[in-house]
Amino acid sequence: MAVLEGGVSALLAGVAEENQKALHATIKPIPFGALGHYRVAARFNLIAAQAANSRLFSLRNTGTNLIVITRLNIRWLQTAAHTAPIEDSLDCFKLTSFTVDDTTNTVTPTVSRKKTTMAAAPGNVNIRNVTVAGAAAGMTGGTLTKDGSPWAQLPKFLIAAVPTASEVKADWLDGLDDVNGTHPFVFAQNEGFEIENRVLLGAAAGSGVYVDLCYAEVTVY
Image 1 (cartoon, one colour):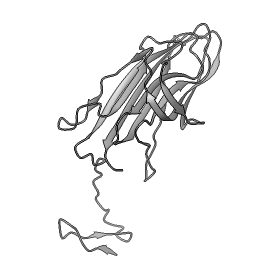
Image 2 (cartoon, rainbow, N blue to C red):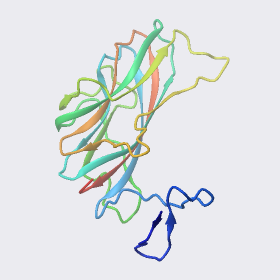
Image 3 (cartoon, helix red, strand yellow):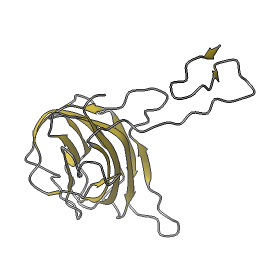
Image 4 (spheres, rainbow, N blue to C red):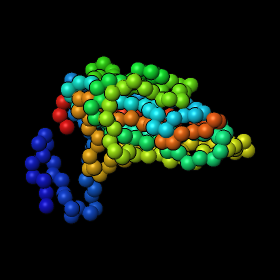
């Protein structure tokens, strides 16, 4: 079976039966029109007495365009001894009715656009992370509704003594393993997501968290 119309050329492509000649395909980015693709990285700490369900990072779509999340990697590194061993996780939740960003204990990271001719970063998006040194209560002051369950989790067992004779490895989560045609998260106006700490940490605690995020702003998806 062959593809008979090539659009911009007279080339033919064999489908399913050409076992000796692989089809050459070029994957293109999501079309963005007058908008753009963006990337940001953030680092912040979890500290002693970090509250359960405290917000650490958030993204909110403030406009009428659509925000398509194309990458979310989280790395978590224990940096200090904990009062007692404890099992914790960083949980990602979709947010709706997200009409007000957090205003306390927040930092606004600088977002980079991926091409100079794209619309200025960060587009119609507000991104916040908790203060770099950490805040036990996390970010507060926002107006939002959280889904009943997280869509991704990064579990970690935090120990009473950080190893000194070997390298301390960071745990890692690919929060958006959307491949082979699965659908990415697409956020409409006043939708978005958050990363939060799951359980109350003890009187001694310390971790560094690293977030890598990419997204596209588009009119249609």
